[in-house]
Amino acid sequence: MRTAGHWHIGLAADSASSAAPGMAYVRRTLDAMPHEGADAARQKGDVLLVACELLANACRHTPGPTDLDIDLDGDRLTVAVTDSSATLPEPRPWCPAAPNGHGLHIVERLTTGWGTVPAGSGKTVWACLPWT
Image (cartoon, rainbow, N blue to C red; front, side, top):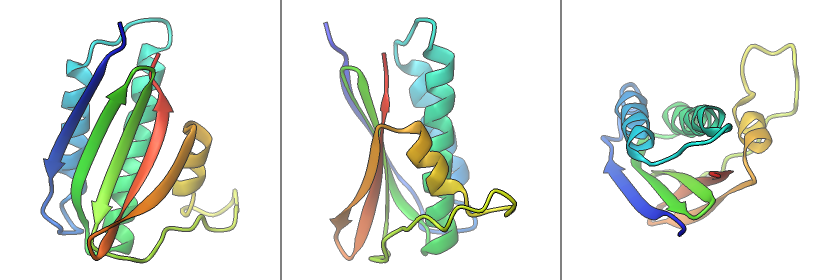
């Protein structure tokens, strides 16, 4: 039997403080999901890192995240962060010596895919990860 579910939290679009409650929600949600196996701890860590990057980008480059959604559909978990800015995220040129600017490169590396969809006057940035 495949597992499925949807989890949602609304966030105060305050770039200084929206990431912390979002990350706490992701941790609680992942802890409540049945997930066992050799890769369970690594997969949870990957989801946490991707969620952190999406939330941090919304805090840094927009007025802040307004919603966070987690969808589980069988062996695929999707994390989605919505904000009120229509500006689309773009990975910065890769520069290993730079102290920042690696967020979307990390997201690309850890996920099976990521992208954006319009959401009202803003957008939702989503990323899919394996959940086996």
